[in-house]
Image (cartoon, rainbow, N blue to C red; front, top):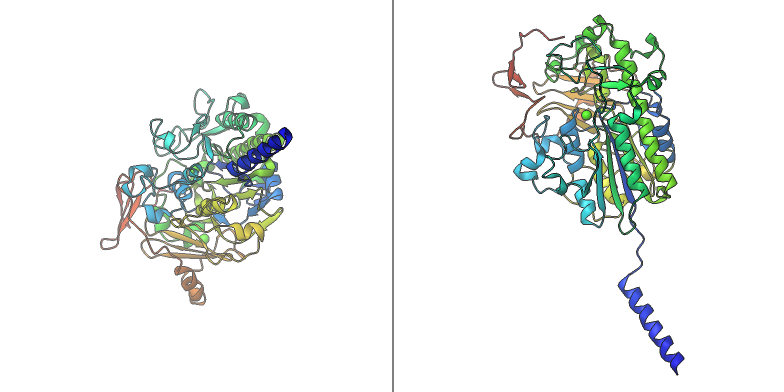
Length: 496
Ligand SMILES: [Ca+2]
Ligand SMILES: [Ca+2]
């Protein structure tokens, strides 16, 4: 009798336990890795024949890489805002290094990517540069992520600049070179170390969303000798540039980067800095790749890799002499093309997709991969079809905007650019991957232009209140452009 009662009680208890905790497969974790100012000089992307990035390449081989991925804005703040909200800069009006989007009434309470994960049971972590400017300061940052690690950044610096004074005010960030220091004292090393510690001590009660943002190869590109030595000290390092390449680009293309702290090609050549800059940029790229490798090794060690979606992305590219400039703020391939790699559950292994992809696609892609409720207010498209079948057709090209009215439209074959004053460029990326010959204006390509033009953003708002730094406006009625508050006229000499 006692035995029967005991068995019944046990049965009831088991039933209650099963009822209380319905068996649900655990949602995958997310490891979200950002690289600052990282162009396509990544081994498997082929943007530079000598680039050494074995860890990103290995992740790409384990997952799926997008060979035709582009940013929605060629500058930190607008690119990251666009990615984290899955909204185009032409929708938010965030084009410059300011404002922080939470200071704008329409986006104050907008659910950003990590917040959507938090709302569905994730604990969110961040370290290094994920949002530009640290998410509105320490008092407000808890709203964006649960747990905050080190801010990262440059870390150890030389006592004084390593290169000659640069034009446009000798900006303190305009510097590069090798000097004696320890890798362990660099901001990016500390960011990786913190991410590794979190992975090793990760509580198991909830899935995690862990964001790590690397600062390099953003200037100043300081490297230790070890990374510098990965690259030869000769001209094979230099990207090919065409003399007078800007001869067939509209004058308005200069307005997008009219005056900047980043020196022009002319200056780096005259000051014997071109090869040094290229070598330092590549050295820093390899250093960041090694930090990503440290985090991925920890993911393997802890056994978390099987149930963690990894995504690696760069916020925009960087010119190193192409089109006569160094830096960003352009609508050309070197400024818009970035690494975009996914790996983990639901992602095909060894996939290489040539379909155009945009960084604002990351948000809906992660939501779908992790089985979270989809949102109806995102402008990105999920890349899950391409993560299952890299050849799956994606009709929409990648669209990059730099201030109102200036857009680049990148399809599988072509790049079409339209500036605010109506001037245009068209490049055949298959036959002219360096964008040396502008085909716009040739009648035989008018159909191609018409096909791309229809993708120009229908919403194209002026700069949001508080916009500053790298903001360009154009008044059609007076044909006057204003760059960072200063009027630029047709007759002004181009600051080359
Ligand atoms: Ca950046
Ligand atoms: Ca040209």
